[in-house]
Amino acid sequence: MSLQGQVAIITGASKGIGKAIALSFAKEKMKVALAARTKSDLDKVAEEVNKLGSEALIVPADVSRGQAVDHLISQTLENFGKIDVLINNAGMGVFAPVDELSTQDFDRMFAINMRSVFLCTRAVLPHMKNQKSGAIINISSLAGKNFFKGGSGYAATKWALNGFTKCLMLEAREYDIRVSVVCPGSVVTDFSPHSGKDPSKILQPQDVADSVLAILRLPPNALMSEIDLRPTNPK
Ligand SMILES: NC(=O)c1ccc[n+]([C@@H]2O[C@H](COP(=O)([O-])OP(=O)(O)OC[C@H]3O[C@@H](n4cnc5c(N)ncnc54)[C@H](OP(=O)(O)O)[C@@H]3O)[C@@H](O)[C@H]2O)c1
Image 1 (tube, rainbow, N blue to C red):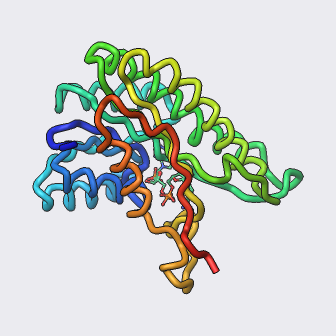
Image 2: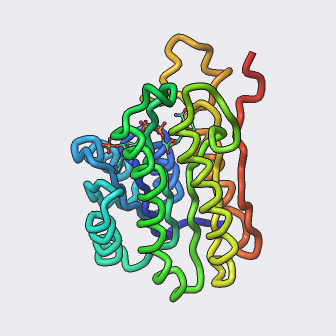
């Protein structure tokens, strides 16, 4: 399936996994709307997208805020005319035992990892329903399926995200909209740097981007609703 000419919104596109997805889409000649809070980081990604011969729109935005999301959607439609793909990727994690986790960090994780997904998804659905096509891919985590000490807040957001995604998938496919979730293990980014470790033993942002492309490359009648992504041999 050629993805050329498709329009994608990517949240958290300035770094790490979101940046890898943005550049992979640019190589496919997709047009990308890039959202994150830090404009200077988005500018650098947009420059790389342009060098790959594709178009980037940067929209500095805190995607946990409704007005910012509405602006992101309207800017994308104004500049590119449609939305084919939404990648809900923006996320953050604070890892601490429950009695050491602040209310502020707990609320921030839910705002960015879950509320933003709800807001962005709700805003793009009318357009995708009208065009009777679209793909929404949520970047979750294996933390959304497993248990580990210090992960209560973060894992809860990703367990919530997985539940949200599966319910949405059943609703949206009736309109030929494909909804998927990618659940990676640890990936080398600022979120989780793994400095000094053998890179072949750890997932790279490009591995997640390749999973996203695999989902999108399926013919429109086929829906890969979930990918668990692990390093082949972590030892
Ligand atoms: N790295 C891992 O080990 C790993 C494993 C599994 C799943 N994941 C998931 O993968 C996703 C991306 O993680 P990453 O490792 O690429 O993290 P990262 O390198 O820290 O990048 C996070 C991105 O999200 C943006 N962001 C954060 N808060 C935002 C907000 N309120 N509004 C808009 N953008 C916001 C950041 O830019 P600004 O700060 O400028 O806004 C940045 O572009 C997350 O959902 C994470 O939970 C990561």
